[in-house]
Image 1 (cartoon, one colour):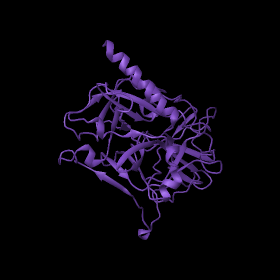
Image 2 (spheres, one colour):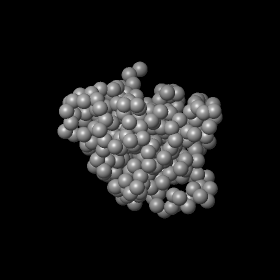
Image 3 (cartoon, helix red, strand yellow):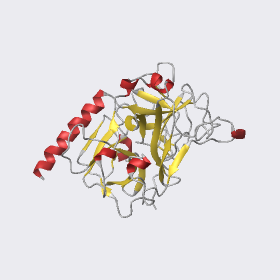
Image 4 (cartoon, rainbow, N blue to C red):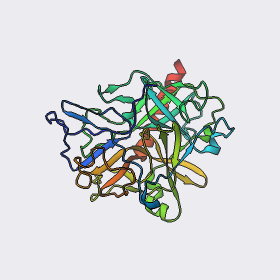
Length: 340
């Protein structure tokens, strides 16, 4: 199977000469995957940096993901599995994750399903253009036999994501979000089982976690071909003194274990037994001072400690702006479906 793996990539400097050395202090990796290349101004490097330690086990790599394989075939419904996610495949390449969004608060008239993901999932990052054809597999590739739904790339709403922009730019990630539309849902789809959107600031992340609230990552794991969940993550908003630099409101840093295919996955808050999407996973940051390219050509090794100052994942937080964008997107879809 053709596979555009999801390990990640670094885009180093827009005006550099051809080189394979790392010069910036903070590196960024997107959790889609690429073959390693060095071409012109770009350096694209495979990097797996998302399974953190150290809870000891003497003293190997820890991995907190729970994998669900064949849950649908065993008769478990979506509400039982609490996954609410699937895999995005574009032009024959596995690209990442998309979350199934509950739209009942805004409409009851849609024929299909709205998905939330990262904008870069839908871009060919070698050609710096949107893919021509994308499809969605609910739960994971092959989980629902015979189900693969075309994503309507004419019905998308994305942030101001620029695939040619250096990932070292201070504002990188703010526009890396997307709402897309699947016109044909899977059999037995229930809108009540989808994930609602919630402004991350409305639950005050730190106090929510301190009081026992659960934050998790739901995302595709390409190595096993399943959707996995990392439970009880630490999620904070970036500040001026960490790797995110607090450069834009709503950049969330987290320690949720993940690997290839996690781009577009959901940072989810569980409140009174219901799941709410509070962030969209984009990629990872790490310090070149802590992990110099000469010693760590593929980024921090699995089992490295999570630290907001040296090695962390990041996500685009759901805020009022994104919720309003979803409302506008739904209205656009409804208007189109009236006439077609």
